[in-house]
Length: 104
Image 1 (cartoon, rainbow, N blue to C red):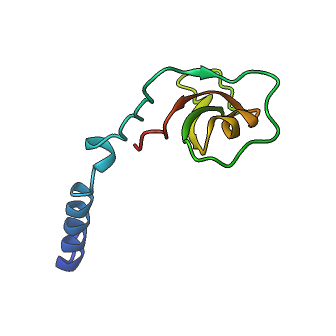
Image 2 (cartoon, helix red, strand yellow; image 1 turned 120 degrees about the vertical axis):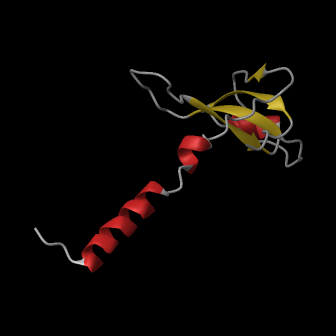
């Protein structure tokens, strides 16, 4: 079998490029989310239907609605709300921590 030089060069360059691909996901895994600090406060029933528009941010634990058979399963996520009343008026919120959620 007689392979031409341009074909051999193309195969060599292709192999070289594949070998040098960026392995960012392997070498730099996604950072773990930072947990909120302070005391956790659970939302109480009955929940408010009307809230003031004050800005005192809270980090709320929100039910994602995801139900899995295997783990890990993100059944809740953290979301910043403008205040505790606004957070707890959302029926998907379990509770909250004072201050905005930490940035990841």
